[in-house]
Image (cartoon, rainbow, N blue to C red; front, side, top):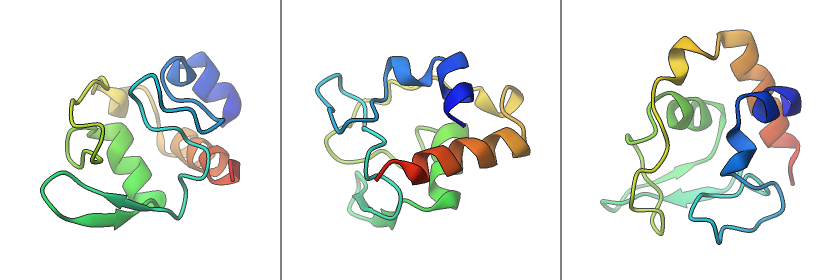
Length: 94
């Protein structure tokens, strides 16, 4: 998962140390956390949420990150096995 996030350029925007000053959510502590979504709902950052956020980043934008800056089109670049590896990596960043 870490290799994939490096090779796909994900960590050019998302940090793994909690720093969100670049305008993107950090992955540190993300998995299992409650995310307040623009529009009033809230979700838990689980496997389904992370997959949806990668494949369709504009679907549930987290408050504080109202501008959708993430590219779409990852569905054609990340297969199911790679997605599981990426999610496992994010899950490990506590």
